[in-house]
Image (cartoon, rainbow, N blue to C red; front, side, top):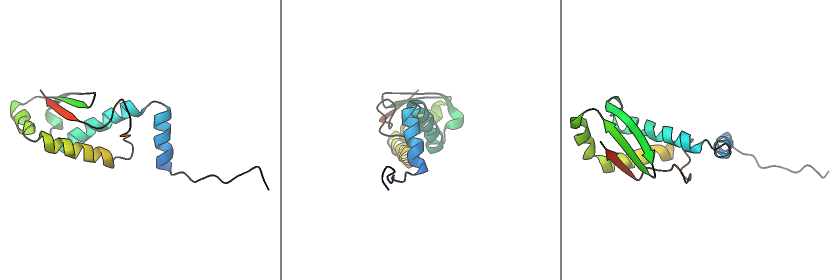
Length: 108
């Protein structure tokens, strides 16, 4: 019986990740995951007016100067929490060269 060989089993998560990469959806999906991680980790989602991500930097505009000052002193902790949340997210592709992990946060 030759001709049909055994194929290795692939998990559904692996298939989804491969599909996301092959269709070029990773940058947009990663950006949305980063924004969601910001809202969850910072608690400042209701105060966030604008979100922008480029070249590893997350730019955030908040509506309150008091909230901005509080977040400013927590930037290092927030950076760790956001990246930990992204690492735990099965749909986040950290090896994407366009949109990967957050390297810095700029508050406006």
